[in-house]
Image (cartoon, rainbow, N blue to C red):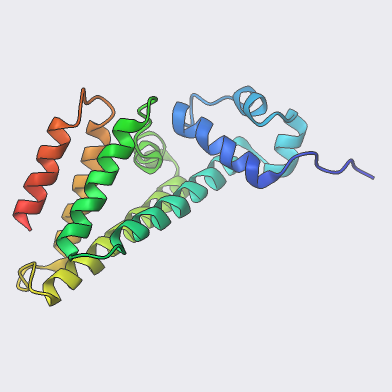
Length: 192
């Protein structure tokens, strides 16, 4: 009989997510994971199968937590424009408040791995689609309320908001302060 697991796989995925997010997939070694998770290599491979399988689980965990966080931001009381501004400003604060300036794990994975890794590309594509869908629903609410021009294409506006967020999250990695990013938020809101 094998020995029972001495660790919680869900906690291990959470910790692995932090390592991959900080270092990226390629720069994360199995030893980095073993050290962070506090388990042996055998347990790592027996539980997760491979470094890539653990990365995919970590990326899926990130996707779920970020989608939930954004949905909560966009579900606050207030006008659609206020909620969109609040979401964009919260992303600025999140990224600039991170001492490691990790940015968005999904954006990082898209840039690093997606071109050569179909599974990662699919996971990131789903996250982007979910984010775009949340933006579209909020834009459509704003159009119904008369805050946002109903003649504008809600799908195109949502795609534009997603592209803006992706760009802002990359910019935040090197921004000295929030000034430039807040100007982007102001320009987006003025354009809606």
